Length: 399
Ligand SMILES: NC(=O)c1ccc[n+]([C@@H]2O[C@H](COP(=O)([O-])OP(=O)(O)OC[C@H]3O[C@@H](n4cnc5c(N)ncnc54)[C@H](O)[C@@H]3O)[C@@H](O)[C@H]2O)c1
Ligand SMILES: [Fe+2]
Image (cartoon, rainbow, N blue to C red):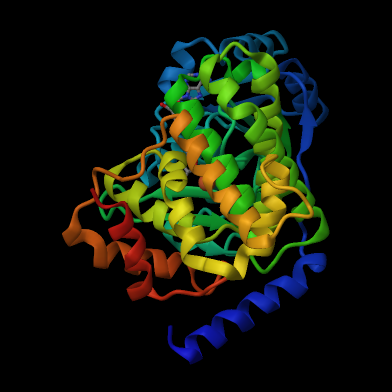
């Protein structure tokens, strides 16, 4: 990494770190069940909402109780169920068209990160009607009030219900990017683990891995606060205890509840303290090959942690204690190794592979350039790497 570029990155990150207490972070109002949603909308005198979801969630009947409750309360519900995993700009624009055509006044994102992000991105376009999503990509480009937005997660993974981010992809260029701004934090989130009961094991594993990657990347970065460190460690504690259980038995509601909580905590941590290169590299891969976000992040995390080396051993020690595999009096190197081993063991148990089989060698330079653009200077990673250095992670996961 060029010394001047590294200096620029660190100055940029320092600016954002000192600004944390001044920035308008907020938490959504947390509701325990969808039954509270009509009341919340009535309080705001909202008569028409757009529910953004995907076809399989609707097919499972997960949105039906809420749709019925809203109609009973004389709130008109228009449903857009065309969201696909890794939602596209085209889908968001289609949903925005429905929002306008049906005079909607609020948004409900009901699904995994894809549906919640699509709803948040619709909100960004409504707030800034003259802009494209591409114009709004990056940090703090929305700067306008979005419609009231309620996020209802049906996976325990992204934490989108509490984050500033909406991640979309351009289906032509395959470029996947984040829109990150404070108006995108949902106004309310319904955290009901019942909505995650039908998540199939492979999705439970991938989304659960995403929880751990959020917590770990937020914790080892240079922009943590006392609160985000605590949230990350609690998320890691819960996920190491309950993810395998939720994977093995989707009806284990104690495990599902714990993972829903872990997802929210990890989201709250990384929305303030950012993620790192596992995410930057993963976004380039999931955009190009349409591979699941969480699983790809999970595959990358051990390689990324190993590449940072001894610099992060103190943090890995603390994470090891939270994961229940290290003790406070243990040698730091030993504790870090134990955490890495526990992470790899957990991935094996829940079927997270070690390679991304879709990756093609000839794509690596372009993908690494994308990861560099996303990660630098924004992510306060322990060791800064440029596009050339980031290529190592693609070779690591190449089959
Ligand atoms: N906004 C953020 O802060 C943030 C953070 C991390 C990731 N993301 C983004 O979120 C997206 C990934 O979201 P995700 O991992 O939740 O997956 P997803 O929303 O793409 O859903 C994955 C699959 O699981 C299915 N599914 C979801 N809930 C289900 C349920 N209850 N029962 C049965 N099937 C169900 C979906 O239909 C889909 O086929 C990516 O685009 C990623 O980049 C956003
Ligand atoms: Fe993620």
